[in-house]
Image 1 (cartoon, rainbow, N blue to C red):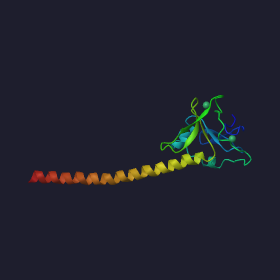
Image 2 (image 1 turned 90 degrees about the vertical axis):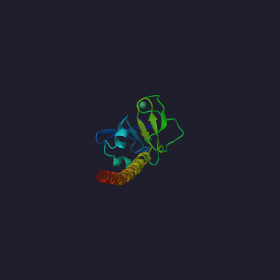
Image 3 (image 1 turned 30 degrees about the horizontal axis):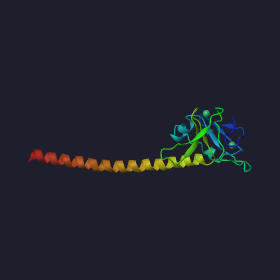
Image 4 (image 1 turned 180 degrees about the horizontal axis):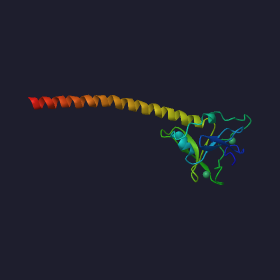
Length: 152
Ligand SMILES: [Zn+2]
Ligand SMILES: [Zn+2]
């Protein structure tokens, strides 16, 4: 497969149980087949930290205005799609095979967004558990009131 951004031959890279295609010594972009990015993003696969430091060739210039074609499906254009829930990270996606192309740095954004939502979840959880305590005490207050009603 060739790089959709700079046409260099992609090389396979093993990350956990996934085989990811990277543009090593080229533009340093990364190709994720369908469900691979999702598996990483949802934590089903360990985050491939090495992929944040794919060797980039300084001589390779990426023309972002040029159309990009899916490296798997010939003649299929990649379209920019908001990948994450907060709609902040737009990445090239093939609507035919469901693969994603990440320019250098975009994987970092996906991960940062993940960290942000993990922090959000944690905050919600903390709030919930604080609330639970309150609900418990309201319940307790009701029970105490009912007992008093029975007695008097
Ligand atoms: Zn490339
Ligand atoms: Zn495709």
